[in-house]
Image 1: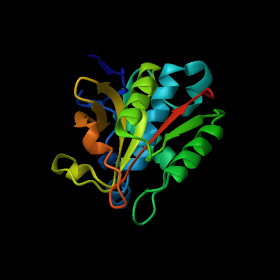
Image 2: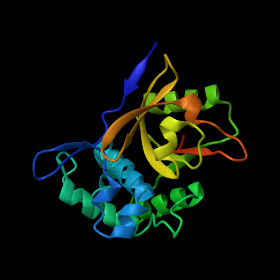
Image 3: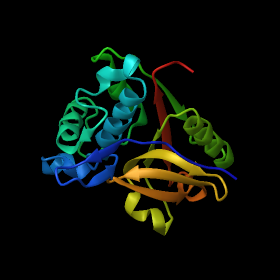
Length: 207
């Protein structure tokens, strides 16, 4: 059995506290903080790509990518949100998340490609897609809209970054609110007319 976690972006605040990825509550505007999970995840993944491939993707992050400062990262989040902009009910369109993230990148001289995982796929197939993506060194953006499982209840209508997996129990490892969590993917990928989750991955090369 295999467990793998990406070396995801680490952010330090002025007190030296470390975060795994960003936190939407860092947005200064109250509405931006409330609805900011989508742009925060886009900000994390774009910064990750900039760090992992500075030659091709360095333009995706305008600050020191080797030592990510929380104040700088908030400015980055603000810039990303100008493109990846939620509506009154948040950001629930994966297509818009894709196109707006690509537009941000293109305006910084970077052409990104995206691959969505169909919500119609069986859970085992979708999990294998995650494994292959993580094994290639790419995180995924996960949107959970509605979900019936209690342990996921507070993470519904919410975007998160998938940064790893544990295939012994078919678990995924995610980053949200600057912290690492682990979910049973069989519960996450609960696809019915009433419940839905989505996955999308960005990379700098077409696959």
